[in-house]
Image (cartoon, rainbow, N blue to C red; front, top):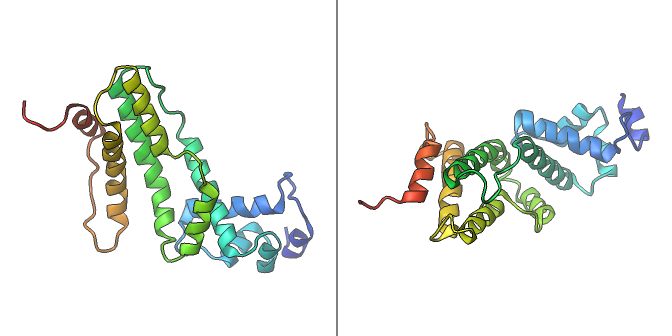
Length: 203
């Protein structure tokens, strides 16, 4: 599709609006190449439109990037499958599934956020779009609270959730920070879950 033709269309051949096409294209680029070098020109070229066409559908480039980042996160979450339900299987098995999900999620989305640290407006716009949207941490805390109500867990579930989320952050972020020591190997999921459930005090 030539830039001139694309500019004239409100919808693409597959029925999506041109706005949706641009968001999808930008999300594709984030998935393939990250966000650090993502530009309006690169998005326009990949979408097959002239650079100026983007501003017919977005207030500014920050709006497009924020929408694309939200779409990237949505795709990653959709591809990770369902989380275990409270009361199913065993708590240990369910926490292993929760942590594996969290690690996979963070490995896919944190690099995209790190690449936008120099663009705080984009991150702020993304936060506005997220609003009250439930995050994995929210679902993890909800799961732990439900298991506690069922009598299968005891103790501070907020602290347990912080430990599990912290493992995900350290594992991924330490490799992204320019001056921090990289974590070359992730702690074993089984070992982390066992520590959360049993603690580290001598018996």
